[in-house]
Amino acid sequence: MIKVEVVYALPERQWLIALEVDDDTTVADALRSSGLIEQQPMLAGRRLTLGVFGRIVAPEERLRHGDRVEVYRELQADPKETRRRLAAAGKAMGRRRPA
Image 1 (tube, rainbow, N blue to C red):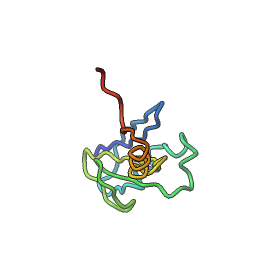
Image 2: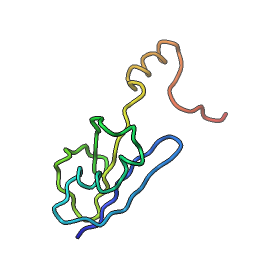
Image 3: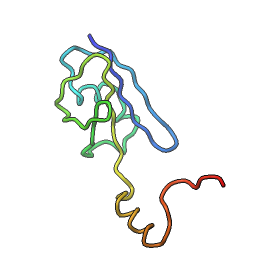
């Protein structure tokens, strides 16, 4: 048995689900075992982008002890396009620094 975590975040809430699973568990198996899809029905039936510690992985990848499976949200806007639009308008991206 190995210990892994499944994480998902929205702007207003985060889920971190700790699991103890078999040694041959895949990313997809851990996601199913976590119950996250039942808690977040909007994820059901979608092609999800999954990662382990910031590295995008296939659902069939086997997990190791201590791995953190991350479920990524779709981008709301392309960051490069947003920067281009702001630059064209003479604005900067990010937070304003105090004077």
